[in-house]
Length: 270
Ligand code: ARG
Image (tube, rainbow, N blue to C red; front, side, top):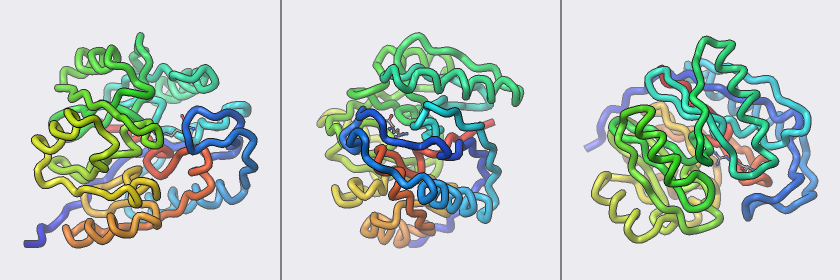
């Protein structure tokens, strides 16, 4: 039976790819000194922002900083639950300065920001659901940070181990569809973590490697519309069968840095 899906209006924080480049390689998608077309990256990114706004979502922007080519990936700067912001501490030294710039934006917008002691990359690895924070580790965010997140929010944190370097952040292998369900690519996880996800989400949408390599799990759902990479066709078909409405947005230029729709999107939950 097709359930009726109800979208919820979101508030997103994003950062224009004005200074986007691939200057270092910190994940397998990045080839150092790859030429990127900044104009194309900007056009593609603008189409994402237009898609969000035309579906009723609020979008705030952080001013991009020269010399921080990955700053467009706003998801990594923090994670929020009930208006409380848990900041970031990047694994790669090249990205560490980003945290302060985002912190400045949050403070100017009336939020306090908790500064983590352990390496953690915001919503890249920390994914709030209706009941938990699903938390990835293995490549970036540490288990120590998972403990810090649980202590800070008082929400149960479910630690999940990522095993495939192509899916180095949790948000490249899993996304939240609504308060009760998720979509994910099982092979990105250790056997035990796969079992945990199967127990917690028996009705989850399971994606293929092709969907995952097309960055289809790096999607944003508002509960009805799913902003998704156009190459993830099998996944989009499954979502449509379940009553979701896929909204394809192509960010191929940003994929040269291993980023996609969700990577570019910080959700402010208040
Ligand atoms: N080049 C960036 C990095 O490797 C991409 C980050 C993508 N962000 C994400 N939320 N998955 O750190």
